[in-house]
Image (cartoon, rainbow, N blue to C red):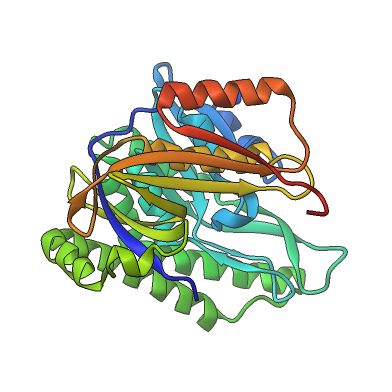
Amino acid sequence: MEESIELQAKIERIIYKPTLCNNLKIVELNELCSALAPRAMRSFILKMGEQALLSVSKWVGPKRSRTYPYASIYDILCTTYKKVAIIPVIKDEGAGGELDYLQWDTVSLLSLLGVYVVPTYYVDAEKNKKRENKITNQKFDVSYVKKEIEKLLSYQSEPLHWNLEKMNKIYDIAKKALKSYDILSKRLGVELHPKEEVLGRINKLYAEIEKFKELSRKAAQAAQDRETKTMQPKEMLDNNTTKAKITIENLLGGLYHFTCDEVKIEGNKIYLIEAKNSKSRFPSLGDIKDGLVKMALYTNISEFYYNCKNYTPVPILKLTYAKSPKPILIEKLKTEAQINRFQLELVEHKRGG
């Protein structure tokens, strides 16, 4: 099993200039239902009254690795409005499908990026015509989402405070979701995952939230604990690169835990490599934007430590491909790397090699 080193970092603020953002459509409040439909746009500007505008990222599921929701987060980073992510706490596709649930790591990253999370649930769906015991085309409780967004308009504290408040009420939202799924199961005649399994996963999420709050209250002690578990460089760095666990602390004292794909130490520099790979073509735009969100974090690190020693972080977006994309995409990526001070590494994968 591959070992990983443990790194500590501090971020004071997020300053990042994206270059690949989609042009976001302005949606009126009375159009919110259509905008939240499963196959509608993933990100948009929501107009609330005459003056208030919100940048909205709509997630079609809570799991980050399935639908590349960070691409829609990337798109709203371009705006100066208050940023919101609407995310289902649970997505049960039926006993014949997947069961996904919101994870604290997701909320942590969004908190660091200054995004307010609106956890929500589904109230409608259709029976999948091709697969037994599976549902599709799930729809949010739009009235609930609308009420939460209206509360957010007058909310003055940082996203972390809002997100913690919402996560503290995660059981209530989960119960709404389970009640709704129970009604859908009976109406559609589709068996869903057992309630015990869903509640078990929500218990795990709640435990992660409590751990975050406890560690954040005892930041110094947590750092000391990590030091005692960190192996010496000679033991860890025999290979050219290794994985790394990164704990990032922000000005509010919150501790956020992430994993970096590859890490390489040379002198007083630590290279933080976020890798996106494609064996057939070029990584998809959604995949690339997912990596760029990590660059938004890594390029804003103000202090960086390994084994109590200060290092300079060097963020790298590494794209491995078999077929080159259009030159304009490469040029935009190079421009974004230059503007935001990260390195772009392009690695061609030789077929049959």
